[in-house]
Length: 365
Image 1 (cartoon, rainbow, N blue to C red):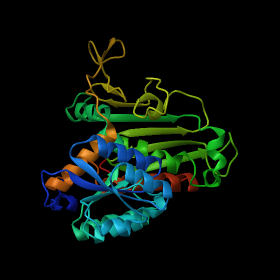
Image 2 (image 1 turned 120 degrees about the vertical axis):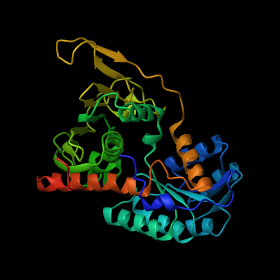
Image 3 (image 1 turned 90 degrees about the vertical axis):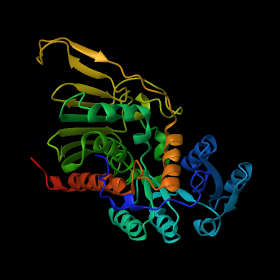
Image 4 (image 1 turned 180 degrees about the horizontal axis):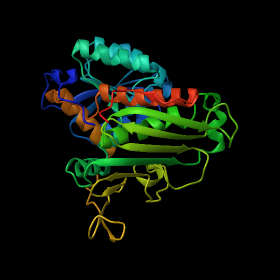
């Protein structure tokens, strides 16, 4: 669901350098941080002003881009920057975001918004109080394929959504689990992967009323789940399912179907489906399915492939961030959006632990 116009972040004031490339700092120069640095370098609306990271290698990286280097966000905020991209470990998101907000600097926080629900709530509250833009880096919403699917659904191409499904089936290699925390609770597909699928479903179908989840760890026998199944009840009346498994060599996941990240081999399969009263749509291709005749299982189905313009997702996200800074326009993915997706994942974790249905919102059904 799009962020409502009453969201307090719609009142964020624009920066004074409207029209000039925004000066961005990237805090956290790991794998994801470096991807953000490359995205900033590729778009004309932004320039890399600074990099902050305690690693000596990050200093050389900053120098190679002609940017200032600091070992912490505090140094960055004393310099001349218009916005901060926060790509630190999840547990550090709150401290970094609150430092930027206190300095009056808009901040784009890599997903998930925070390492805990309470941290996420505190971050959003701080941003609203200060009137500073807080964005969540759920970059899939910026993908042209998701944009095409969103436009089709909003235009009524499938009628009223009634059912949805997302699959994340993939094989994490054995050496992935050489890091101890990935073998413990919190290191499995619910907290690491489900937030992506949840946010995409929320974006396309709407907010979530309740969830019921079950997990298993029967493949690796670690203390963390390797498989999870979730029933999602949407506020608008649709029902959804989410099936996660990181222990199967299967082709049905966003990573392997979307072609978004060149590090993964592309299968071009479908990883999600949304069904409505008039038709259905496949994700990520945004292919529309409709009956050629009456709405009946006897009618042949026709598939209409979407004509989707190419576009780098992270570059589009940076362009959105720049526009927020320059004009004060609402972000595509606000901190409030990221918090709601985090809230759903928290509910999934609690349901998996207790075996009970967890209610998030008062539904309309």
